[in-house]
Amino acid sequence: MLGTDLCPNNLCQFYSWCYAFLPQGEQYFTMGLATICWAIWNRRNQATFEFKKLSSPFEIVFNACMHLSCWAGLLKGERRMELERGAMILKENTKEMMRLCATAHAGDAVE
Image (tube, rainbow, N blue to C red; front, top):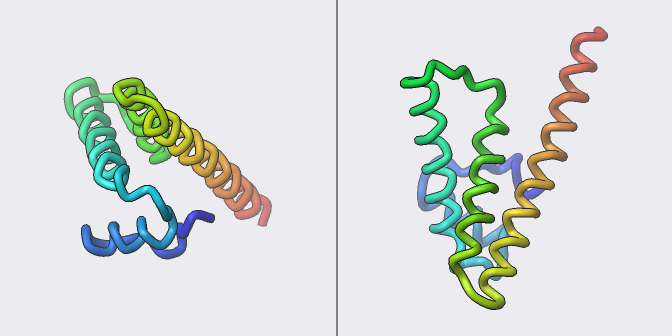
């Protein structure tokens, strides 16, 4: 699913991964990376200053999807629709990954 078995370990690998698994989205790669970094930073601040524990790493991805959707409102025309579509695809892939993790975890509990 979306190349999750080949996760990047550095910035160069990130862009290689993007070109391989997200073709025709070059203009959004840096925005996506910035969004993930922003979501991680905000979540870190919540943990540090508000003492809110992270219940799941998926929180960060959903937060990033929310930021992408909001930032799409700053764009016009086709670029806006592409970014909104990208945020929706990321959200749907994350939901599917959550289901897979829950299923795998439930299987571990049964054994």
